[in-house]
Image (tube, rainbow, N blue to C red):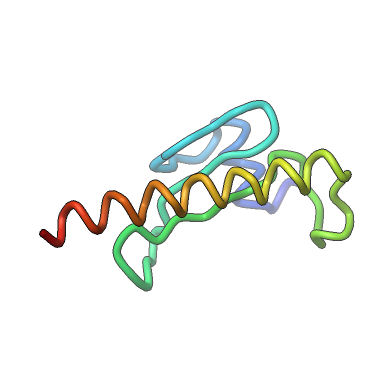
Length: 81
């Protein structure tokens, strides 16, 4: 998708502060974070709706989001104390 910023990031045509990346998804810092450690978990294959993801992509995306959120909680708790 030529006008999709996330496709441009995936193609390395746009900069991003990448937290994690694998063959199916990428996790990057939001450029306008609402809270500390606000990240975006993005599927690499362009789709408009989550329902368009394959079962494998959807399961992997949500498993990755869960792992990242758990890591962020540990990080934020360690900084708070």
